[in-house]
Structures are given as C-alpha cells and as structure tokens.
Image (cartoon, rainbow, N blue to C red; front, top):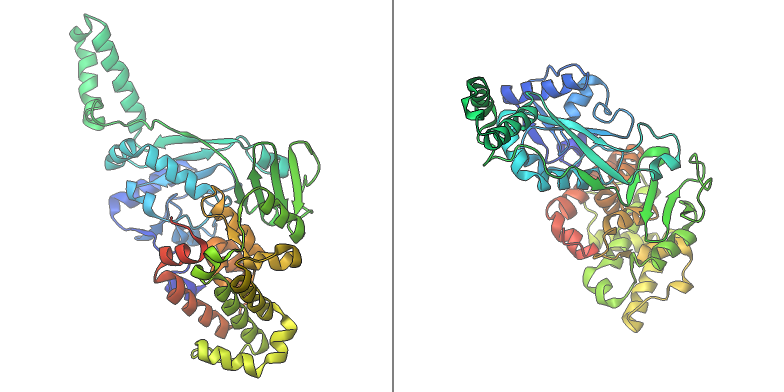
Length: 428
C-alpha cells in the first residue's frame, strides 16, 4: 500500500494535526472513549476524525468503529467538512457527517474555538448480527459531547439567562450573576454564538455496508431491496412483503431491479458518444488483458498506439475473451441506431454499457454496485468502490500495480470532477 499512499490514492487529502493544543484535545476525546492517548507528534485525520497513523499506532483500524455501528467521531475544526472519509463500515457515513457539520456550522465554529467535539452517530442497534439488524436502522442521532463541557456550560448559562429575564428579583442574586460571568468566560455571548447543535437526527436511507462481506440496501416507497451474498445471515428470512432479497451473483435480477426502479441511464447516443464511456470500458478491458497475458510486461509505453499494436498481435486472445469485440459492436450499434438494445445482451455484459442516472439520489451507490459487476474497470472501481479496489490491488503484480497507479494519477487525480462529469454525468 506504500505506493498508493505516496501517490495520495489512499489516505489522500487528509488534515495534518501537529499543533500541541489540537493533539491534546484529540487525546481528551480518545480518553473519553476509553482509549489510550496517542503518543504521536503529528498525524492526519479525515472528516470523522479517524487517523490512519493513530490506527496503526493502536493496531486497530476500528478504534472509532468498534462494532461496525454507532460510529464515533472527533471534530477538531470545522474545516473537516472538506475532507474525505477513508475508513467506514457504511457508505453513507460521509454524507451523514457532512449534513451534521453543515447544518450545525455556527455551533461547530464557535465550539471548536475552545474545545473538541466528539461523540457517536447512534443507530438503533448496538451490534449487527444479521440483515434484520441493518434494516431496523431508519435514522441516526448524533450524540454530541465536548471535552471541556462547553455544551453543558452553555446550556446552564442559557437557563440562568432565562431566569434573569423571567424573575424580577433575580438580578439581586449576586452568586447567580457571578456564576453567569464565569460561564460567559468559557462560552462567550450565547446570544451571538450558537453553541448547541440544532439538528442531530438524520435519515438513514440507501447504503452499502461492509457487514457480511458487503451488502447493499436500496429504499423505495413500497419496497426495500437487499443485495448481498445469499450466505448473509437473515437473507430471505423475514418480511417478504416489505423486503426483496437479491443475490449479488444474479446479474439478471440485479440489473432488472436497477432498470425497473429508474436508477439506470439507458445506453443512448445522447450521452454515450459525448462521454467516451464505451471507449473507456474498452481501454480498461485491453489493459487488463495485457496484464493477464504477461504479468511482467513493461507498461510504461502503453499508449493508444502501443495498445492497438498489441491488439493486432493478440487477436485470438482478444476475440476469445470477447469483451473488446462486444464493446466495439455496441459502439457501431449506437452510431447506427442511436441506442443499444439491452434485450439482446447477456445480463452480465449489460453492466458494461450503462451508468447510474446522474440525477437520481442513489447515483453514487448505483455506480458502486455497477462497479461490482465490471471488475476490470479499475478506474470506476477506485472512484465508486474503493474497498473493492484496495482488495483487488493486493492481488496485483508489481508491474500492474505501478501502471494502475500511474493511470489513476493521470486520468483521475489530475481532474477528479472533470472525469466524474464526463464519464458518469455527475456534478458533485
């Protein structure tokens, strides 16, 4: 993983924490969680406060996520809202954290001037033993604490201020006034500084979770759909009138679900030709074939001319694999008719020619699921399904690792928003 880390393809864009007072605050939060303080002089954190360096120090990458639910968080600065989430059991942790930080921006701005905010994203279950436990999570509540109890002191100051306004003789209570002055030294003017987060409850909608080897939950008005390996505990066990269970290995049923619920951008010339989507899939296919055929091949010169020459020299291999000729045939069909007839394509290959409907709320999750069915497209896997990408990367030969990293740096890191917009139609 060192190559990925050096290239900022894992644990990239994190916030460095090296100021002694911020490290001290972080340690107060760790201690409140019952953990040992870090001895590091510098470390990095993501949006939730997770630090890969602290995780390595502890030998525990789940130190903020001990049971895979009720995720802990540590907020040192409001600027964490701009960071990614690099370690989580749920795909929507990042969005939930973003909503909490953005909806309570004023309070968090004020609190983090003097204190650290920490707590849990509390679910309705303490642990996940089967699918039913996951389905019972309809909303989450941010349980928010602060090391110096600025939150509690602000609430106390507010109560005393209300008493001062409501009781005519309260201003004569010198002890109370002195108490208010002491509290104000900590909290400031609470009339101007909102110190208590206003919104702490959020909906828990569609998501992917790492539980049971990876499981998707999609929520529609009349039905919740679970997509996972059938070996997951609780699969097809209860509530068939409310929950539909699909095997992640059943390409036809998974595709039909995405299609029938309006989550797919159908393969039409209007977006396929402008995006270069089929060309991208074809390029990923050939590069993977090159590696499989000769893991030791030097790919430093693997530009379009080199790849075309390789294709001509390995025509039998390319044709027997079948994916590259299929994508070329689809490109010709789009050019001739303006669309692709999905009914004539075997289920597994349909995922090669579709993407998530960009305007659908579940677009990112749908693209993540599509990437599960197109493992050779390592760029799509990295963009939407990093957990799967990192697992793939562990199996790669050294030459292939270096080539994949260079491709990601050139094609994606150089303009992330541009690639997501061009290939997938996503604007954020």
